Length: 139
Length: 130
Image 1 (cartoon, each protein chain N blue to C red):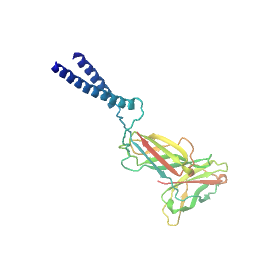
Image 2: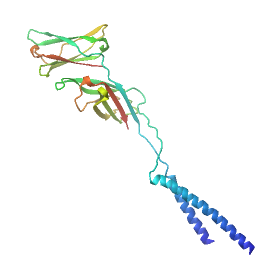
Image 3: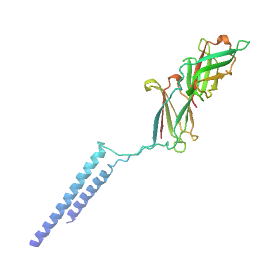
Image 4: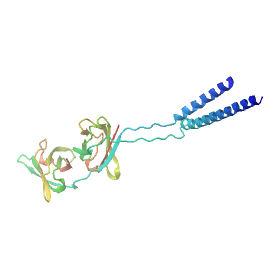
């Protein structure tokens, strides 16, 4: 009789221990699931690399007379010095800026294999108004 | 004992499922490349220029002489448009500004068209670097 009681007590202890571990695991699992399922907080890190490893993209310009201005307008923007090895095929955006950094025109294209890209503004930009150029390459 | 084993097995399975779901909380992040920059587009100092023109016996412009160009513009390309009173381009030409010590000058002799001196009202300039 005593042996049977001891055996029963031992099984209950083991059962209680396993039940406690099971409940802990379940609660832990619930907490982690809530973070993902509700999108309450998702975080991670990634490096934003630059494809422009060598060279400096440089804008040069051609102009043409426009009687509407009247005066010279930017006919084309030639971007030289592109890293054609690493940036080839990536999207490039060139913005001509004026006084107070106003956007005069944004031109988009694709970096060619030659490393030199000629872009034509889609609107009339007075050459005299251009004070800066911004270039972005993404892909 | 058999019931106890089944119960424990079920509970362990449930716990393992939740643990697996919890592992999915890890957020994978990746990024494509991005390069960006800005640069100032500076002027070599040209705010206004003066020009004279030569006229042949037929009354057409044969040459435009541009003077007073800042030395910082040396080596750059000067474009000149011959403009009418209605701001129409009568002809245009380009010249490379040569090296100079004080001020530079440039001469343009080809305009892509015959320009009557009587139609010429003003000049329009552009200087671009290379």
